[in-house]
Image (cartoon, rainbow, N blue to C red; front, side, top):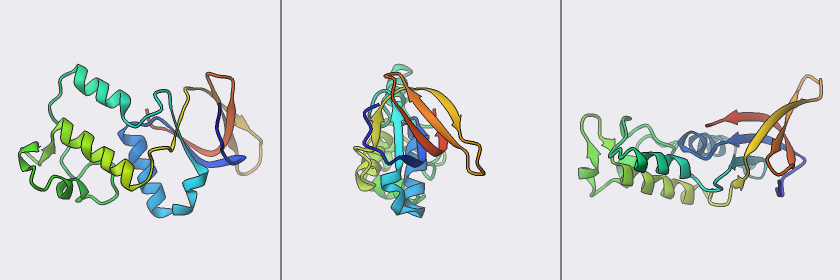
Length: 156
């Protein structure tokens, strides 16, 4: 793993889909100082690659979730982003269209400066490290590299 990371990450997020993005933004809102001690791992190396592929392949025109359910910590951010595009919010509950949601997520990534936060790696194994009161996990990737994290979230 070619990772310029600290010796121990505070949080490692495995998966760069909407759930990984949501967790990253919420963590950074609460603990901005974790920016340098947070890592997101995804084989594609970009946000929402698998999500976009699946939505296109299944020809899903809009989300099932209402407009308040999205990766930004502000529940009304998507509605503000959709100003002038109300035709892309589908009844009931203003469910966002696929393209609107994708563009909104790109905006979220840019606003939270998460473009380069992803390490392109497939995590293949997790291994407990140490037996102290604060156990850690070693993440192994498909290239033979590893990194240690205090907390790991599977956002697959």
